Image (cartoon, one colour):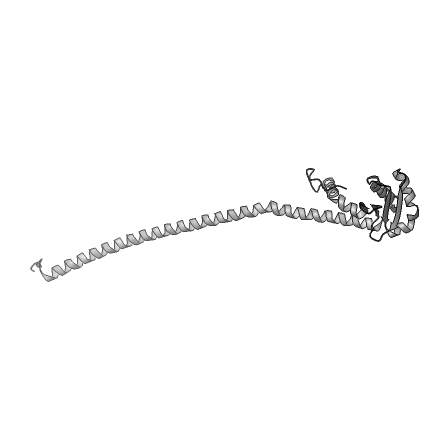
Length: 217
């Protein structure tokens, strides 16, 4: 049998097919390598993006946590202040209730408060306004008792009952009505309350000793 001719169509066709097969294999190999490389790069990029998003989320969570924690002392202080004010207001309302209930010696109270006011006012004539109940009970002898207690003579005192004087005490005005000393117990409570609330809060441990001083009597 004669050997095939190297230039025969059959031989050339086989070589072309073989070359095509080798090139196809090479193309597929390169394509596979490139695909794997692209896939790896994509996974790396996706991992980087995921990590960046996680870091950003952690940073945002930490920021929000810090903001929340920063508001805790402020909110705690606000709630404590509100509670303190509620307690002190309850105490003040109870003091007002006790004054209006008149659970004290109204007679002696009027004498003391009237004497205090007159001792700080110039003049010899004064009008003293007391509650209607006090005036009915002992108004007739108050002028002499107060004059004796002040130690000032002569002293002309006019005692009248006034419905505006609730809770006990007295309103003192000079004869001309130009100077008035409001020594009603409820008025004194309002004037004294800033200092009273400070002392109450300190003695009960509601505030520190460095709390500011309130008003004066």
